[in-house]
Amino acid sequence: MITIGLTTWTEHPSLLGGTDKLTLTEYSGVLPVVEVDTPFYGIPKPSTVAKWHQQVPDRFQFILKANQVMTLHNMQEEGLSMDALKTAYREYRAMLKPLVQANQLKAILFQFPPFFERSNRNFHYLQRMVQWLPGLPIAVEFRNQSWYEPGVKDAVFDFLRDLGVAHVVVDEPHALNDGVSFEPVVTSPKLALLRLHGRNQQGWSNKGPNWRSQRTLYRYSDQEIADFKRVVEKLQTQTAEVCVIFNNNSGGDAADNAMTLKAQLGISFGDLGPQQLDLF
Image (cartoon, rainbow, N blue to C red; front, side, top):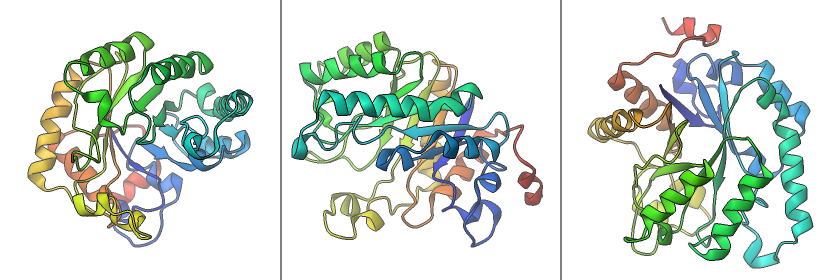
């Protein structure tokens, strides 16, 4: 199975040929999965997540980012107590319940910070992460190239397989001191997740005040989409589902690129909401 989605649901009006922000219900009438970054900044209440569930078809699914405490983003500046870490995991599990009960949780996305490098300590943390989220689907995105160094990356992939964790295949600008390489490797029999951030090297390296508006400012060409199509078709033979998330949306290009990939793959998504009828 192949699924395609975008980051957030409001910012893709071209899905319905308009200019207004989309509702979750409208979005779910076109694509079968969405990635939500809200939990990274603050863990929503279970009642908020339950409202998301009520707005989408039964077979729609969510990828939720892990909270920044869980991904150790503040570790360097502030340190982190074990009590704070366990509290975050406990509140996060409670938040997930409405989606877990409805089988609408595709994955918890751990997008680790660039300083999360390959080390014995961080291997141990990955083990703890799985123990603290028992039975839940987890996907890991590394942003430090040390995990992909020649001679060690195969052992990293084997480690993720042993944990039952999906490796996130990342497409982004890759330089010696920034970004990670494209590694289309499957580590879970259930899910392969691709996150496509675009290839804007200058914007990716921009550390100034406007970095958010530049970092993912990129439109994939039809040829680049065709290259992804071949990767997706190859990965499809190795796992039950390949899910592609387009995050190249600083200029509103993600939705158009997603629909181009959908067309090139020749796939359709059933059991979507009634808004799909508006497209015909």
